[in-house]
Image (cartoon, rainbow, N blue to C red):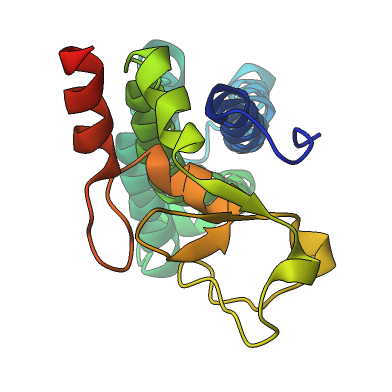
Length: 237
């Protein structure tokens, strides 16, 4: 839960980091789930292909599909991590099946059915990997934001708290009704909590300006550098 208003900047930072970590964890679990789905699919295909060979009913099949099956099993056993190679090999088997012209290839009914199964399964696996990749790419912004919040925590705690001490806490009831936070562009609302007014007279939602302070020590409106002023005063003391 979010810390109560008014809050310390350090408390907000810890709350924000915990929220980002939870979101990243959920996305990582979802991405791993998509990848994990591909494992039983590969094992199932390996089992079906091995059964075709062990049955010994391939004597009449001396065409390319038979050699494709042997190659598929070799790749699945010795190179299971080469997903792209397996997919291309499956696509090649589908091409041999659809454009088969020799009698040997046309007689390979069981292998032909297996090729169709492999091709559909590879499309499903490719979709799972694509979904995991999209999730990873969409999580990049969360990782960057988490890095910003973490780096902000490396500042001297006295500096961060002194920045807040230079602001005034104002309840929503005391704010002008037409006030708007330029960070989130939302108006005054009791649900948004208290406001913080800087020395430059610009006001913001407390949660908004605290998240802003984790990224920058300057006012979002006039670019007045509160952090530099606080640091210079602390150094003089």
